[in-house]
Length: 178
Image 1 (cartoon, rainbow, N blue to C red):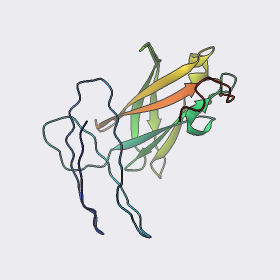
Image 2 (image 1 turned 90 degrees about the vertical axis):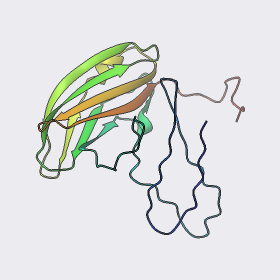
Image 3 (image 1 turned 120 degrees about the vertical axis):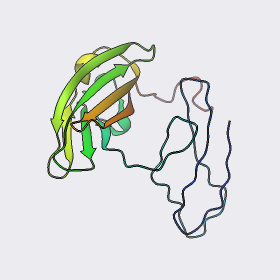
């Protein structure tokens, strides 16, 4: 566990936190422990990277978002997934490819496909993903990995989650645990 404390100000400032993990997964959270009277705390431009030293902030060349038919990508077994990958690039009319894989809870990985794309004049496009076929008859939590390569060679990797499970009815043994 790593803790860092910062005194907040009214101007934008860069904060760097070094973390060391010996595991394959890592989570982090922010906790504001000060009474902000009539104000707000804005956090922007998070950059998580490997290495000994923080590099200058750079805008990702492409931003991907997994969109499904359910809010938060929480699906029930009978719902159609209707998954789309929304891509936004920093420049309009960008061409590239995106490779998509899915891992289940047991780390079984499936290649969904490699897709060519071209963003529109606003730098945006959508790609339909055949996750309904992949997830037929399955339940659980799934991780989608996208690796995008733009025509100029810049790359970006993003991870998303979707789940397929029955909704709880408030009758389970641990329903009042929290």
